Amino acid sequence: MYGFEAMTFNIHGGYLEAIVRGHRTGLLTAADYNNLCQCETLDDIKMHLSATEYGPYLQNEPSPLHTTTIVEKCTLKLVDEYKHMLCQATEPLATFLEYITYGHMIDNVVLIVTGTLHERDVQELLEKCHPLGMFDSIATLAVAQNMRELYRLVLVDTPLAPYFSECITSEDLDDMNIEIMRNTLYKAYLEDFYRFCQKLGGATAEIMSDLLAFEADRRAVNITINSIGTELTRDDRRKLYSSFGLLYPYGHEELAICEDIDQVRGVMEKYPPYQSIFSKLSYGESQMLDKAFYEEEVKRLCLAFEQQFHYGVFFAYMRLREQEIRNLMWISECVAQNQKSRVHDSVVFIF
Image (cartoon, rainbow, N blue to C red; front, side, top):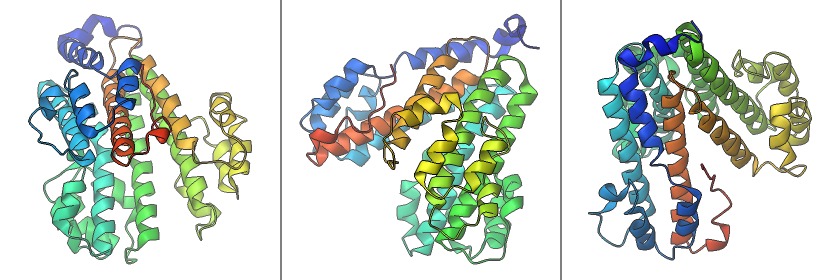
């Protein structure tokens, strides 16, 4: 019941909520980012990060450093924190935390299937997989020739199994089919997560509904823009949109018939929360759209911490930490490639 969480939440969730709020204070600040953007080498970045919570993870890394090493070690910190929280969690929080990783599982499945299609080494692909999305039978994905085999041989025993019911076909896997599979899986996953949060009720349902609706709307926009000029029909496009969110259902109908970025902009400007995002872009420009969406998402995630006694803080913290790792990757790449002038292009400040 909304408003009564305070009476019982701390019995099972109080300790972990305190832990996650403590972790949040360790996120890098604007001052940290300004210092990182001044760095001349990757070793300078390592030296600056040694004063943050990433210090113990990077301290034993020898020079010369690589961007992949920095990203790997920072991700390892996130994984350690996640595993600690999962070990301490009771139901329904344990299930909620598991839901957070399903998106990474989908990305890993798509990465391995795509890599196999292009005859890449499976071991090399496994190293590129996100550690939060790993499952026991992931290496055997390489043997599948079509969706049906993929499901029958591998995915039937994973949490993704229910999401596959909509995309089991006998068609051979090619780049187009794999992208459709990714978006169909994501649609099923977001709808399932949304239903689960609604079932939990209270502040969790209210806050997570807003965060997941934003994710669903962002995916709808990205699907529309990426499918312009491809053989994907309007009906196929419509099937990939999630059945909730601010754009559902009328915005989806309009997005399905868009044929260029300016038409997408026209649809989105009818919705006040998205008007501000598109007002930052000049006409015909979509390169900065991702950054504008990330900035809006970060703003919403930070707001989740303003309320207590709900599970949304766990989702928000994981997403903020992932955004921080993306920022560090971009800064490290710019420094490594001597492109200091572009260092601010994709950094999204969290605080």
